[in-house]
Image 1 (cartoon, one colour):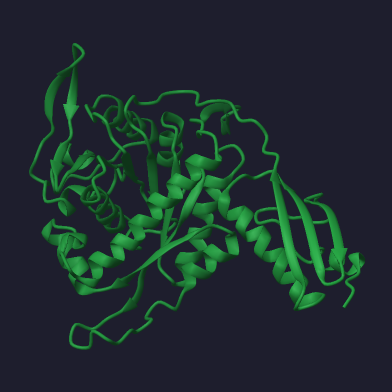
Image 2 (image 1 turned 60 degrees about the horizontal axis):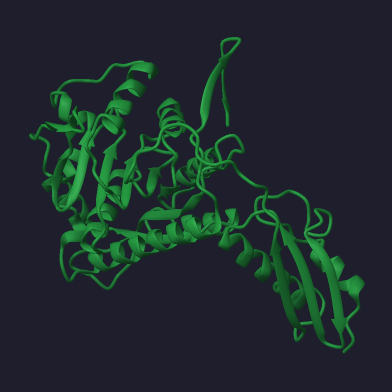
Length: 375
């Protein structure tokens, strides 16, 4: 069968690059199409060097040609990347801190802190140097999850300056506003006070050398998020959601916040927590209480990696309450699930660092009483 170039272009007009509105032909991504009998060669030019964007574009082209033109066509996609130059990191950075990963959720109650704690201890088991910054000023829970709620950071001298020494357990360094408040004390602060406290936890602390600093963000897309992205060059973000439609709608907003042009923090992927329920007495049974594969489908829809799914199991809650994250339960299915999730986070961080320049810390200015975010 001889394939017509016009048919190929018509097929490619039905798809677009992930994150872009125009179709591939209209956007100029398709540079050239060559056909020889049943062979098709498509030359593409992308402006986003992210590995998952390139893979998604290649897969979409092949699928469109097979479905709309000829299902047995031999398709070869050549992709070149012409990404605009980005300036180097501006603003504050911390020597010795190699990767700063924000763990976020658009909605509260989806298990973001639980995911953070378990990724942290799994990274430590893998041999990485890990720290966790509990940035949930109004609802800090990390000290409880690491069984250090009664601890207090000590003061140490580093290069002639007094610094806070993070509390450490399970091989993870931890700092939280929870160390400086009473259990029954509510933190009633406006944004500037919260931002100042977070800056102290970051810059007045003796973190030492870290392969990963995980930041447990509060729910939503608010002032704390902007303050941290103003203070730190975030390597990437992980968004946590349940499969529930309401949670997915908020997770979509969380992804959109990081992907705004003025913020531009790479999203490493989405985690689906509480994916399914496994009764203790029926360990082979799965019940999809909050829906099935909602976060996986959202990741595919947004063109970002799906990092893994964590089941809804009573022992995860019990482990968090007891201050010993479930990933420390050796030889269990939960340990394996968190290992897979953490390995994917590490791999996507490696991919991000290989394919993208360093993230900038953003600048926040106030104009005519309105907040504006700019590079």
